[in-house]
Length: 176
Image 1 (cartoon, rainbow, N blue to C red):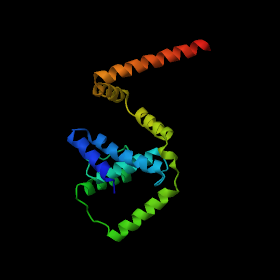
Image 2: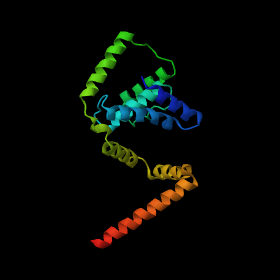
Image 3: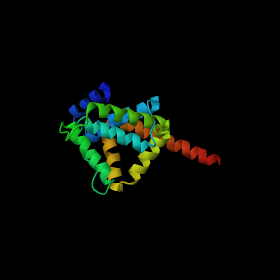
Image 4: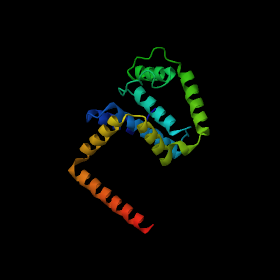
C-alpha cells in the first residue's frame, strides 16, 4: 500500500493539472526511497520503476498501458489489470489470505535483491537508456517543455550555470 503522503502528492499533482506520468512519478519516487532505505532491493532500476508504476495504476492514476509490441503481452495485461483494480473494477479478487501471503513472498524475494538498483548511477543509466530509445523529436520536445516550465529566473540561472560549466571545461582543456 502506498504511503499516505505519496497519495496526497499524486492527488495534488492531479489537482494542479499535471500529467498522469507526473502523478505516477510520485509512486516511483516512493519506491526508490524504499529501496534506498533498505526496505527491499530490486534487480534493476527498471524493476523499481515498474513497481512504482504498478502502484500508481492501482491507486487510480490514469496511466495508459504500454502500447502493443512495446513490452511483453504479460506486462501489458498486468498494467491493464492494475488500472482496472485502481478504478474499482477488479474482475475476481483474491482472498485476503492469498493476498497477504503473496505480498509477503514478494517482499521476501525482493529483500534478497541488492540496493544497487536504486543507486544514483543505476537510475541515471536507466533514464539515459530509456531516453535513448525515444525519437529525437520527443527528446527535444521534453527539453523545450522543461525550459518553459522553469520560468525566467530559473532559465537565467540555468544559462549562467551552463556558461560557468563551459568556462570550466575550456580552462581544464588548456592545461593539457
